[in-house]
Length: 209
Image 1 (cartoon, rainbow, N blue to C red):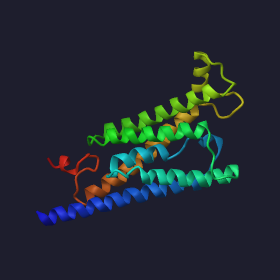
Image 2 (image 1 turned 90 degrees about the vertical axis):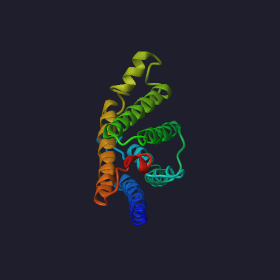
Image 3 (image 1 turned 45 degrees about the horizontal axis):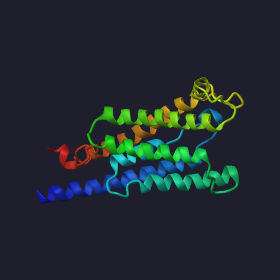
Image 4 (image 1 turned 90 degrees about the horizontal axis):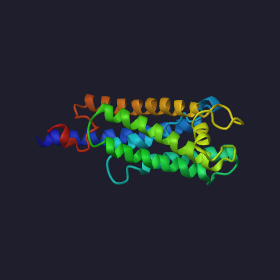
């Protein structure tokens, strides 16, 4: 029994190291990936914060996706703006959304359900789109401060910019489901190969109860 617990504990540590490594590797992908308007909002960050809360353990589990976020932001800001630091409403809205994604991940970690995992990822995409689009509507003078103007911000967006705003939601959904599914699939496959219970359980003992 003691040997089984030792092996299971070792497998848990390895799984968490794998999860942390995947978060950092996918964060690097954000820096190296090709850009372009058609790929706007195709980003792994919401999925990383969500899955980090689901699969990693401990009070500091938020620090790994936060490190990937801040480091990649510093690099991208310097590349595109010539300065590593850029503080504006867009960044504030984004960081707030990442905190919400982490909270959704904590909720999803309370039960090992693929439906909960997928639902959390989709909810994160929708919240990100609603929050950032509403923020754009509130600060952009191109939008009427009315229900019609808000609806425009959610659909076609500012006519001066391309592509239309709804494509951001499409790209967010695709990227969140892709990166979240990739992360969860690798973690669950690794646990299954090691003979460990599903890592979606909040407490590993729950999965063997």
